[in-house]
Length: 137
Image (cartoon, rainbow, N blue to C red; front, top):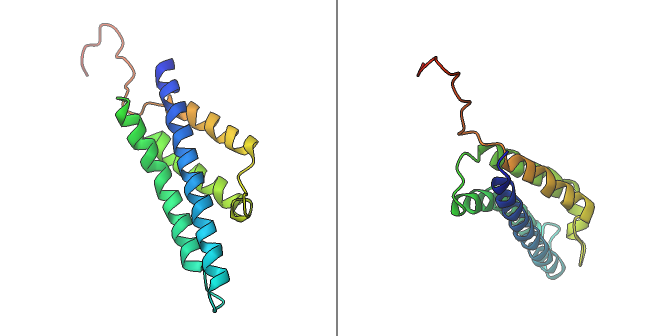
């Protein structure tokens, strides 16, 4: 087991979570301001959708960049699964984040970070060693 890869993953996942959550909090505040100052039923919907899409795109991007900056390759499992898990988690708690001063419950964020830290250890580029005496097949 490569503990350094897990430590790098934990740092990267934490940074991605903080960045995405901060983006959602500030973006939803922007959407609320647009909704209160607008005069139509759809005021603030564009801002809400852009914020949600940006957060869901930012998470895998930060995961990829963070792991690459720290010299780790083969992060496909972390990027895909971590991105989908963030979309599911933030989508489930979207009403909590959308409140003024709202946030995803800390236990849910901690569980997300722990699961993704475990996923960071899954290196899709590693191959199992060949048995001794078989040569290169």
